Structures are given as C-alpha cells and as structure tokens.
Length: 527
Image (tube, rainbow, N blue to C red; front, top):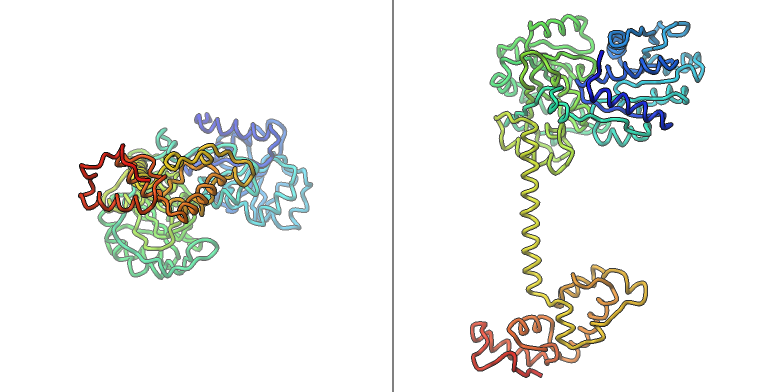
C-alpha cells in the first residue's frame, strides 16, 4: 500500500526522531487521515530491523482494527495480548495488546523488560493514565510512538510530560485543502440553551447536568434537524444513554429513521451495519462512537454534548470528515450554548490556531445563524475582521497619542525653553539612573504636562521632576503654559513668571483664543 505524501513524511520524521536518540515521540494526524496506515508502515520497518513491536490500545475495537490494517497494509500477522490470549510463545513479531490486561502486575511480570523494542500507542491522549505509564515503565528501554488526532492545548501540555518530541503534525485545514478530507460547513442553529448551571467534573462539563439542561430543548432540536438533516446521513452525540434513547424516539416521531447504540447494546454491530446500509438515516449515541468506528458516508454531525476538550470535539466531528462517493461536504450543526465559560469548543476550534480569530469566527457564525458557512471561508473572513479591528484599534491609539502629545510638552522643548543646559547635557552615571523611568515617574510627568515617551532613563525623569518642583516653588511658568504660548509663537516662555504667562493667556482667551493684533509674539518680552 503506497503512502500519501504527508504519510511518508510522517513515517520518515518518526524514524529521524528515534535516530537522534529521542525514544518517545508523537504523531498528530486528524481523524480520517490514515494514522493506522502510518503506524502499520512504521511497524513493518521496525520488524524488518528485527524489532518486536507492541501496539497498545484501550478498546477491543481499536486492537482489531490495528491488527486488520497492519495485515492488509504489510502482510504481517499479529499476536494478541488480551484476556485469555497471550503473545508469549507466538512466532509473530507484532502484538496488539489491551492496556487493561497488560497493566496487571501478574501479567506484566511475565515479560522480560527488553521483550518489546518498539511500543506504538493508538489514541495516545489516553497515555497520560497510570495504566499506560505502568506498562511503559516496565519496558523502559523501548522506542515509543504515540499517535493521536488533533489534541487540545491541555492535552499537548500533558502529553509533553510523557513524550519528548512532536515528530510530525498534519492539520485539518491542510487535509481539507489537499482533498484528503471532506470540506466542512458549520451551521449555527439560533436555539439558545443555558449551560449556566452545569457543573465541571474531571476538567469537562458534567454529563448528567448537560442532560438535564438539554432535555427541555429536544423537541425543538428535532424540529431544526428536520429543516436541515432530512436527506443526510447523520450522527448525533448526546450526554447520557437515556437522553440518546429519548432523542431517538422523538426523531422517529418526526419522521426520521433513527437508531440508537450504546455500550450495552447487544445488537450494536447489526444496528451499525444497518445504518451504513441506509436502513437508518440518524444514529444517536452517548459518546460511544467517538473512537474506533468509521462510516465515510456520514455527512452531518450534531453535537449535543458540549465540551471544553478540543480532542473530544475533534473526535466527534471526525466521524464525518472522511471522503465518500457523492458526498460534497460535512454539515456540522452548532447551537448557541449560553455559558460564561469561554472555553467551550466551537467549529472554529477545529481550524483556528489563533484564539482571537477563533473568537471572531464563532461570533461571525452566530451572527449568520441559519446559514451554512464553509470553515475555511469563515476562518478567512474572521482573520480579515481581526486585522481590520486591530488596524482600527491602532488608528484610535495613534489618534489618542497625537491628541495627548498636543497637550504635552516634549522634554527637549521644555529644556530649551527654560534654557537648562544641565538637563539637555545630562548623562546617567549610576545603575538606577540608567534604568527606564518608572510607571510612577511617567504618570507624574504626564500629569505635570511633560511627554514622558521621549525620556529614556530614570535619572533624567528624576531631574526633570525635581526641576518642575523647584520652578513651582519659584513661581515660574508651567509646561502647559509653555506649550500653549510657544505654540502661538512666543519665545523662551520657560523663563517667564507664572502670573505673567497667565495674564497673557487670559488676554488671548478673551480675544477668542487669538493673539491680540497689537502683540507681536516673536518680539514679546514676558520676563
């Protein structure tokens, strides 16, 4: 099986990291971009070099998928380390292993510490748990590859404590642009649901509280879906099994062909197969289908399980990002969840790396409620909006600075006006003098009419403040008087008395803020 260009780049990058002596490295690929194929080819290369390879996963479906994909991509058979099955004594060089089985001390102790040379962890965002760490600790000399879909920032921070490098990352926008994943259109539904009373547990919203908050809106949500999803193959994610079952019944009452699956469903395989065959057009689940299940024809995702965890949100949306014949795009339904917690995941979090752009994109999508918008188009518009806002903000700041400067005296003008050679020739000598002016010094200078921006050291600021204090005691002109009168053409106003300047300013004010015709500013002696 020939790898796509980015998959080959990923494979090479992984071996480059191991070649540099970095034993624990990470591969990040969006759902639907063939991470299993990549680690199958990595496995094949490791076996060729004589390694014994362990593929670790936390669910049976993932182990079965990995074994099947490795065999189809490389021809390599896999032993199984799970429940009653063991790889010990097997001639296969590859083992797919259940974390829950292998973590047990009695089982783990049967393996020499160097039994596996390479360990590959599928859905590596789970590897933070103690069970994975126990296994990795036992085989401490093995090369380790963690594979995951796009994790959120919290995941990356935690994964950074386990893995020493990020070998390769391929982003969702790149995959869509290159034609490897389906374009996504986000549709904000103008149905406001209040999450204010929903609690937090283990870093995310409590499923039980979400279900309680969601329940009064299920009929309305079904009505909205009837307008947009009637002719689509839709997967709905809900917080609890009972909510999922209730929503299935409501959808069927509205004319949908809806089914529901959960961890206890004895006929789960039959239902999933019937959905894929088109016997159902909506599949409801309580977070069961976030991993280990693929149906490329899915072209609508409805997230009724709001989350703060970006990796979980990506997994849910990822059930619909694969390409399929006749499929033009994935429609992602988003709702106006009302919460003061701004970390709630939205469609923007799938594509934006800049938080400001993501926030603007979310705002734009909410304003366009009821109208599907392509994610790439929405991000481009949001980025342009952010640039425009930044430019407007900068223009306001510059205008404010200009207004501020008009009211203040430049330090050099002040020094020349008062004819202070000691200030204009000042050079800082001590350490504290060379430091930048303090905030307090700058605030006081501005209050007294001096522009602090042009003063670059604390010593100069201290000297000017000291001079201003002495001038006030001696009854000499203030910086504001200097600025106003020298702006009218009067010279060396800094040498005048305060009262002289005040009387002249009063005369100008009485004349409509114009200099009286009998006064020639350049010849006026105010001392």
